[in-house]
Image (cartoon, rainbow, N blue to C red):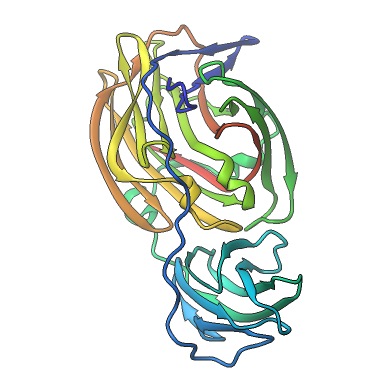
Length: 362
């Protein structure tokens, strides 16, 4: 496990005992975080209170993610110092310094209101909003998952979720969970509230059945990031499977904010070891106060080798195409288990939501 919080805490609650695999200690440098994009082009819509939304137009049909361009002139006679946006009345806008913003905004299918607010140097605010209709993007699920696959849906709503500090990360952490109706795409979303120091990581996990024979898996979930996402180092989404010989196959996957890549795990001399892929990912650069669709395809053979095929973020595919050994003799009871881990950046707190988590197998 990496000393700056890049960790795999693959855990299993079996026979009242919690187990953790070994870890490596390689390290990476942190990424600098979000980067503001250039100012948008000249306004194409009337402004409201000094704010102009150049795109999208009001009532536009868009696909996710869509381009948001906005700017602000003087606000109630004051010089504009910052400008931000939020979806559907969220009270935690994504804010940039200056008088303009350009962002890729991710949203679930349906009608949404995009609110843009500017702040003056004397405390004044001005705002404008547009309504957009987000089309239901094509999903790789339709072609990858066979009709006879077993799909466990709404895993976030299961009652047996637990949390603990990941001892493979440095520092300390604590966590709390609850089911909330907002923000949620459907039903209730699971809210993860994490506090940490010294780049500690908090591990949230749940068992959702047992299946020793399936060898293909598709992870499909929606993640909502708040304005606290700037304190997240890595976002980890793992799955563990006990197979027929009693060994445990670990499917470890994370968005690594230090290396700026999607990472996967392998068995290196009996310990889990993170491997950087060539696919880019930095959770701190994801749009805040918005839902993000994460889909991961992986499989195994009878010798315990795992093939990580592809990952989709908001419908955009990044191919991994890596096959590595990832079977461990841990003595676990038969189980399928998924981990949702949030590694902190330095010290602080963050809140993340998970909704519509489905794991399919065949």
